[in-house]
Image (cartoon, rainbow, N blue to C red; front, side, top):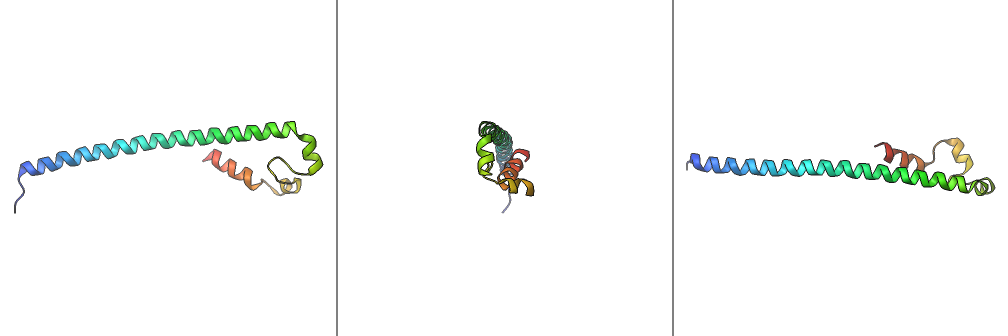
Length: 94
């Protein structure tokens, strides 16, 4: 069985269309990924800002209970960054 030039050209055209379609989808997905990362970073920043506001509004509560707004104790602060804050930092910097 032989394949004609016409069949090969049709197949080539179809493959080129499929290639362009997939390339466009990849491009769109990459743009969407950038947008999603930017939104995640904005949310992490907003969360950080709300935590700062909470700390400013409740300094007496922190001193009385020994707990910060993140739920970590003062002893935990001395050990290093709390896990929740480290996770937020990791999200914000990825």
